[in-house]
Image (tube, rainbow, N blue to C red):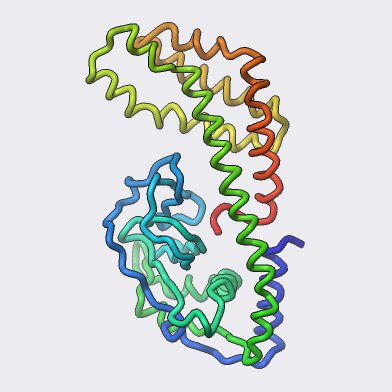
Length: 292
């Protein structure tokens, strides 16, 4: 049993077998105003900090963040999504950012996992004939079972702390992984290639804008293969890179030649980095989904 399942089982047991108060959502939680009016398109494939939209699974990134403290995030369009995060940003119209009114009364993690265990409570607040949405008014009707014996929640704090540590380690592993991908990309398409061809500033800007299009298939395939061995991971990166770079021959024929020139010595040099990232992500992915 992983940590998340252990927490859910404890919360379920508390709700079914302990003396609890049913406390209204709005009595425990409040909404944090959003200063930046980000759209979903303001998130990127790569970046230092997570950027949330209404999706449960698709997490984007930015190199800055709007909110620093740990908050509960509820996606309000389509189908319900639920996240617990710190140092993040959100698309303005798609996500509610929620914090505790009184940190001394209850644990935010306890409420998050209670809602995750009882996601239908949020689902039932979605209204609409076509694309359904939830509202603050509907969410305020949710009632959360809080044990009268607060020691039951305090006893769960070590589990919450363990999950926070694992989340941090996953984030570090993910950063290392992305650095590795970027290094391969830079090796494949060094800036000097562009300068050598005397490309115009307008063309260089176009190439710069296309960088994310090149990285996206590399990252998608690499993540899909990450639970397998290093050879398969490296092979998938190189194969997808070759395929994408070959389409850019009109920019410079030497691009593919540069990518194919990645020697075993270079792969060996980066091997420790990818092993570290892979090892951590595999271990933690089983314990926690990236969307917490």
